[in-house]
Length: 217
Ligand code: GTP
Ligand code: MG
Image (cartoon, rainbow, N blue to C red):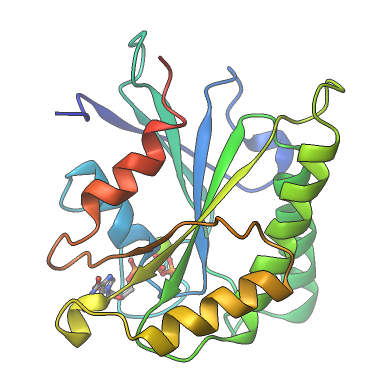
């Protein structure tokens, strides 16, 4: 098994309150209720180490899970992020969160990969396009400044969630829509698209293929 141990480390609310220590991390981002916390549980093989809810807005902090902590090989942080685009958040608070998020993408050195979860069963939302633009800009900026001692290169992947609602299939219309939006947002043409279901565990292997890139060796 790839997961020998998992520990909830802490919830961060600003750049200053994120864990120190330099372990590489992968962040799960996406709209509220898209299934980020459910996917954390699915890939870690834990029933409820990350809290999920039918009601959007469940995850409120950058929740850090240490995977295989202390091992020379296979350790990393998985970060379960708060959902974006949740209407019930007041505008000033939302602005503060967005500022934190762009700073996090641009300058968090430990961040090596952003996994963007998109609901495969609803049309692409404006919030998803904003996330693509924000991550696309960070990926481009970081690859340009490579070797300058600033934040290292950033990988990006998209996971299409809740495929069980359509018998495990993601329509080619949805895939085309996502591909076109990625291109318009300036995201790499080779951005992986992985269909998944936290219910049937579909996509578990493919997500692990992505995570392996970030694990210590
Ligand atoms: P926030 O923390 O509020 O941003 O939400 P989240 O993205 O963490 O979503 P969460 O994992 O809490 O799941 C939201 C709802 O979607 C819950 O009712 C889950 O049971 C459901 N859900 C998550 N993944 C799947 C899936 O693959 N298939 C189905 N059918 N439902 C899912
Ligand atoms: Mg959550």
